[in-house]
Image (tube, rainbow, N blue to C red; front, side, top):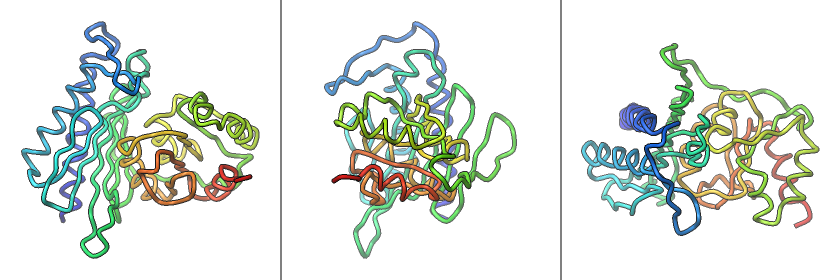
Length: 268
């Protein structure tokens, strides 16, 4: 099947690209640059994305490509690859292993012309763990050489029993939602940061119940959406729309999703 073939390929290149970053991780072999938006960039980000693009263009030359570090490539097929070579670059720079390579495939539906992220593959090289999914094929997780097992979100139904994670509390403040974060934090069992891709991995594998991003790009969200959905959860923007391009996101086990969305929009 077309989807199965692309999923297998996405897994292959996500893991290989992630492993390429390890030659720089916890070393002094790279300098940190600043992009126009102030976010950090390293040679490891660029090297991993160049590899991903090369492999995709060799195997699927008619597909489009969108990535964090380089210009988009337009294709003629209904498929678009969305790449984040290192999600959690600040963690990577700091020697913290909670970063990952994210590869997604989006498909344009012929009749409606709408886009849908149908494949997601995530690999955290510093931990040697990953999770992947394709629409209708379930979500699966692995660690090292251990057997691949089905990934499932948790079954907790109450916010007060749930764990919330996010990438940075400061990002709530940046959009004027600092009070909202404190309200959310007081409504759950406990909160942790170090989110980025690791937060979505934890949701998809049932370790935490909700990951919230007050700001993110499409390459931060594209792989997470099908993974969390196929694991039984829900992935939307803050308004509850099943989108990856709104600039914010909520990934949850689904059972507490509406309660979180209500809190995010209370008073509007």
